[in-house]
Image (cartoon, rainbow, N blue to C red; front, top):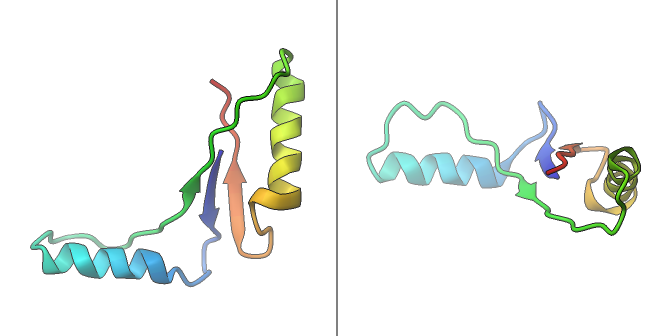
Length: 75
């Protein structure tokens, strides 16, 4: 699962990374958005149920729906 700040939400961590990259000589970095990757191992064998469970986890705890969006990827 990837959790990222929503578009338009200030991202101070991303701004700090962009600034640091500039000071290290990396040019052309226009924007950095910093988020988090959460890897879950679920006992559910049905992919649809596993996705639904992961999405529910994100909505209830793992992502702040006011300022973050999330994407669930099954592998």
